[in-house]
Length: 323
Image 1 (tube, one colour):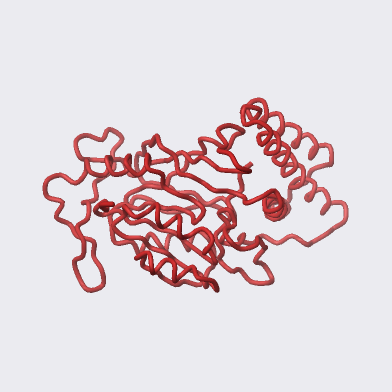
Image 2: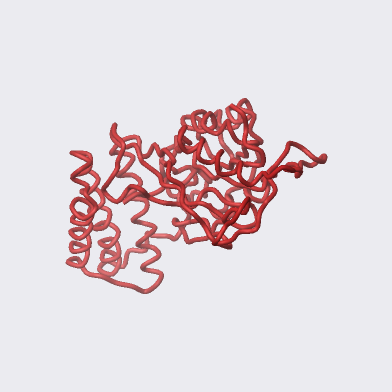
């Protein structure tokens, strides 16, 4: 597969051997692949190196810093950011290739710079503009994401299209956010691509429940720290509204029995995260701490989910909570 000049694909990892190979294979069209690892004890780094990726090591502090470090080290003017449990399908690959080829012009004289000097040919970076004309492209592109869960692709339930900015010009985009909701902010206009990122989410219901328990801790910790309280009936109401929204308003019933499972677990998550706040107010429990989730979570990739707090933050890829 011919690479797209000037496209740097970035991934952060920790013990992602179960997912990384397929992810890297789907990125073989990028001019370079950067893997920022935070101390994997499995074959993650070797898999990345064998695939031709540039592996960088950085102690994990939080997702935002880790991801922005990868962007900083990228040599190309365009960044494509993926989690290890995600893939670029043929349709999205072609769409990105067609899109970025419009900005090459005739010269395309800039090169990807490495520590020793000029490298491969790269796309010249263009200034963003809401009315892009000719070769000028927006600062970034949001891409839909479709999730594979319990043996099927989920096309409803509030899980799709799940738009997120993942393709953007270096210098025009960076990660921002809170404890477990980091997103890309671009300095300028953005557009939307049609073909989705393929997301291979929770391996099974047990993993899904593990993530629900962990993220409900994080949510409760932030709510308690903000001095907010709620009652048991409020928690029940939140759960009921979530189920009705996911299963009926978001057409979860069209996802079959799996859609019913998703709606029930979504309601359970809403109940759990608020009932833990109620529990703290009733018992004075102080067991929650605002901490970064394990960095490997994406689907909490290959590694069991755990709260990094007192035991130390490992930097595993964060499993993205979809509910």
